[in-house]
Image 1 (tube, helix red, strand yellow):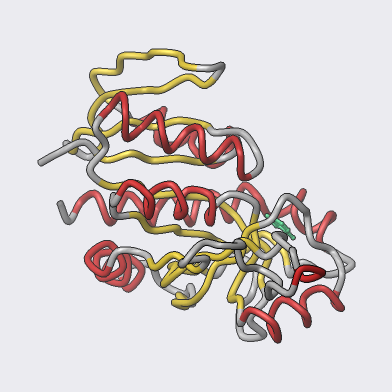
Image 2: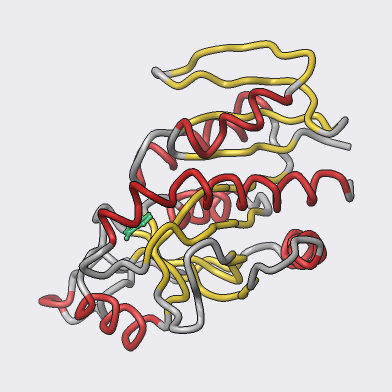
Length: 231
Ligand code: ADE
């Protein structure tokens, strides 16, 4: 099978993969290190994009251009928006959208990219199926499918949570997924975002993020590992 690209934004989100990876070769492009090798016997390239949409976009482009990634999986932590989500629970993206793009003074709805036909980028059906199966194997953890919202903002305000749910029907919020989705959509490469909840994007978000990022990153990683084992 072809090369699978795996992106996390922070060390904690990819460290387990780097520990497990075999036959590793590293290369650096534009300040980001790419680890090519085998994960669960599957050819993969793992990298840490850094935080935010631009970093994630550059990284996705490199995975596709220089490594011919056939699919891209983003793994990491997010703030929960859906009321049923608890810290540690998992979200599989059905689609992604940038919540912070706003040309509404010009009459374009918030969250839509002016003059562009698509602003909500659907994830790949096969990767979603594989993720569902993988999630079913993790006990005691809720797995929801839904829209992942991304913006260059750490959300820690219940009013914003309410807005993101009401305006965009977001299931969770993070800072990279929609950028990966956007690049994959433009190039025509399948993607999925897997996120485990580190916080609820409310007044406790900073404290919860510090406390639960390791746990959540590990959960997300376990999910992706189960996906690779199916390949
Ligand atoms: N990643 C994890 N928690 C987040 C939050 N509350 N806002 C944005 N990105 C996050």
